[in-house]
Image 1 (cartoon, one colour):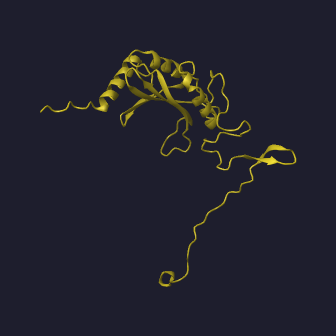
Image 2 (image 1 turned 90 degrees about the horizontal axis):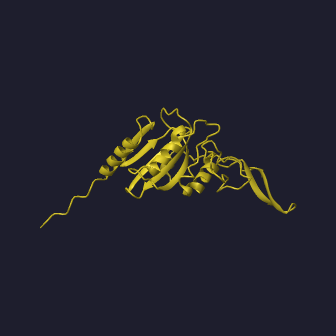
Image 3 (image 1 turned 90 degrees about the vertical axis):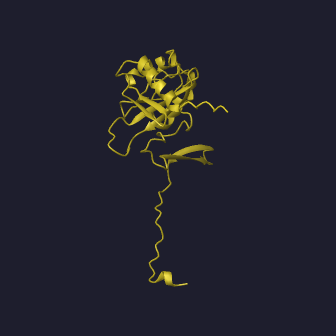
Length: 208
């Protein structure tokens, strides 16, 4: 009775991807390459972001022809000794040709006005993803043809996924019957302090 052929290890795919990245890019192109849980993450300087993304799509050994996702990240208050830029754009790519996945992270150098170039000319599917990152984190994507809010209202103030954004927000809206329309006003929700009830009755546990 013949035994079943061995199942190829996922790590082999990871090793091949790391080798392909090393062959396609010069040393020092990436700030870092991290392999964890059989997933590869590269950190790309923002000034090389577009060139790297184009090569990831077009290089025959890579062929990341599908963009699965782009999201913003706010690293403010990260535990540990992190002292890098606050905002990053994180992209997940898929190569249908080689059946590989890759995560690409690039940081916006200016915390006060985070900017990351748009990759919409490379992957048109990134359209709403970049709009979402702009809406929720305030990351600007130069080159995007229609960068406007996607999930919040046009009159919304701030970017709600930033870690310093208050839970209650800055403004609220209500229908004003006198004006016959919806109006915006400063938020009136007052934070409520929830204090647990503490029983201090002597011999409480002994009473029925």
